[in-house]
Structure formats: C-alpha cells, structure tokens
Length: 270
Image (cartoon, rainbow, N blue to C red):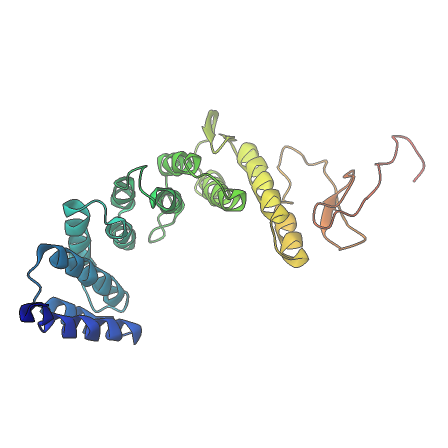
C-alpha cells in the first residue's frame, strides 16, 4: 500500500470513533473536522461522520444544528444512496421544528432502497409528532397516513403507528377545537370524535393481540375502553378471571380469552 494512504487521517478517524464511544461527540467532531482526507469517496464519508458527530454534540449544546443540517444535506444531495444522511437530516430538521423539511428529507429515499420501509415509518412518526408544543395539523396527519399505507409486514408496528396518528387527531378535535370533517378520512376512519375513537379502539385491541404478557395485554385493552359520547348506554364490568375491564354483553374477555357467557335475555330476572 502506498505510504500516502497510511497518512495521519486514519489516526484522527479512529481517535474520533473512540471519542464517540466514550460519549464525547464534541471531541469527535474536532477530530473529524481536522482529518486530512483527499480521496472524494473518503471525503463524502468524512462529511457524514462530521454530521453524525455534530448531531450528537448538538444534543449536548456543543454544535449548531443548522450547520449539522447543512452537512447532512451535502451528503444526501451528493449521493442519494447514503440513506443514513437523509435520516439524519430529517432528525435534525425535526429538532429545529421543521416538520415539512423533515418529511422532504425522508421522501428522498427511493422505493427501491432497502431503507424505504424504515423511511416510511420515520415519516409517519414525524408527521404526528408534537414539535415545541405545536401539534401537527390535519394535513400533516394525512401525510403520515399516506406513509403508513406504504408500510408492509409487521401488523403490530402498523397498529402502533395508526394509534399515534389517531391520538394526535383526537387531540386536535377535542383539545384544540379543530373542526370535524365527517366526509374526510384518516387511517380508515372518519375525521370525527366518534370515528377517531372507534379507530383507536381497534388499534389498541390489535396491539393487545400482539402483547408479550398478560399485564401488557390487559393494559392495552383497558386503554381501548373509553366510551364514545354517542354510546352512553355501554356499561363496563370486570372479567372474573383477570380483572380487566369488559363491556357488559361481551361473550369473552379480549385480554385473557375467558368466556363471559351470553348476555341475559331482555326482561329476565336478575
């Protein structure tokens, strides 16, 4: 190997990696920035390393996230195959309160990329996240639902993402006074309080079916119990086997599967 290929940049590089492992991203950033790398392919990798170290340092108040976003942008624009740069750019833009910019970064990742599914999941989460006490708008949630439609496979993950979208929608409708839209749809439900609550009920029960323990399953089923205002006649009781909440008239407990028996016939003696 030529002597020039064994230059000092490798020393700085591995010292920077060690600094990252020691939770000293500010020191790592200095070392990466001081590396003398001339080969173009190495320079692009170094630019990504600088961005990563800068992002970590920024979380500790040791770097300007606007500069970090620029570094990620350079890598993502120069070579779109660096999906990690697009993910990093999205994270930093979210930290800066730029939801639209975060979404744009993730949409750069093409459908043919092995990172596409992860990008759609991250996009869905970004669109329903609260930023500096600013909730998402319905347009943001619709964009998140569109990303969710591109997520295939794991039904538990899909249910969790749908739950997060619908929780954000319910907050808009109930807490922030957003106008309901009975003709509109979000993640398969009408954009009304009752429609969103019904969708949340479905999502929590789907998550309960995949819960690894009975305690988690009971907790998720209980979270699905809030009764829509349009159904005040629904009465809750307790499963005798696991003590989870069940609706009067249910044939079995969704938490543990215990048979509850048919509801009493109308007019029958108590």
